Image (cartoon, rainbow over all chains, first blue to last red; front, side, top):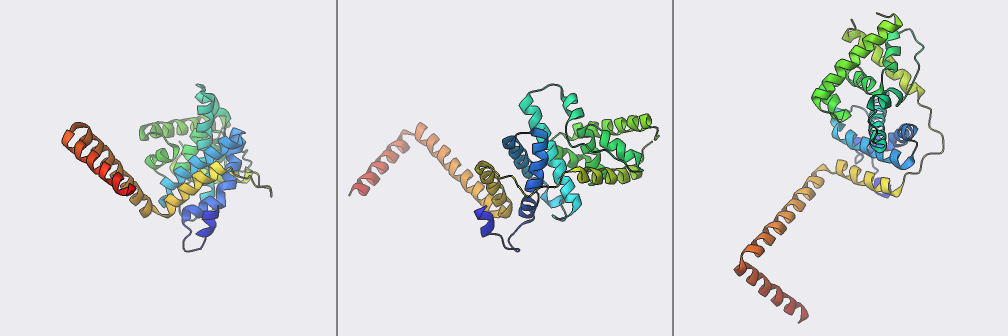
Length: 171
Length: 97
């Protein structure tokens, strides 16, 4: 932190530092909610920032809701990865069905409600592609998976979304 | 059939709801551990000085190459080994003097 203060002039502060200062607490909050363990949550935040550093050129304004949402998505992804590694659990589907941020949609857009009901991996893929506008290749990089796996994930996410929509009577 | 256009709008609404649901952070912020601060300091430095970081990596690479190359030569070439030992002894004598 002393180092950050030393270089804390508007000219010298990079976009990365701005993101770090602005969102470290929020990201920790999200990771801790999933992991319930402060040291693990810190590790997830660090891993998330490593990922942010890789895609820093694709991040537009540090101080905007879209950036905030992207960082939350990345840290959520990293926290779930870490949780899975710690548990050494093979029930991947179970973890993905039950973990991650949850929210209930009460608006008119039924499809938005269905997106929120998707398992976390599927939801992340849909949001990365259709909200943040990343390509499958870029989404794969963010999620730390291969491009072919990302492509399969995208197809499965859409299929599951269609199923949910049918259940809800939207389609 | 879900079209991309409908999906764009729905994804926007879904993300907005998801972000709304994150509880606001209280005044008591988490005090990050020294280990985390150290790791982040390194990462921030790397991102703030990409040129210097690359230079450092190249320098370390060259030094490692010299070390490995030098060790290999000394292992297999007895004349070079002898010269190196003589030079080292002279250097130590010079330091003592």
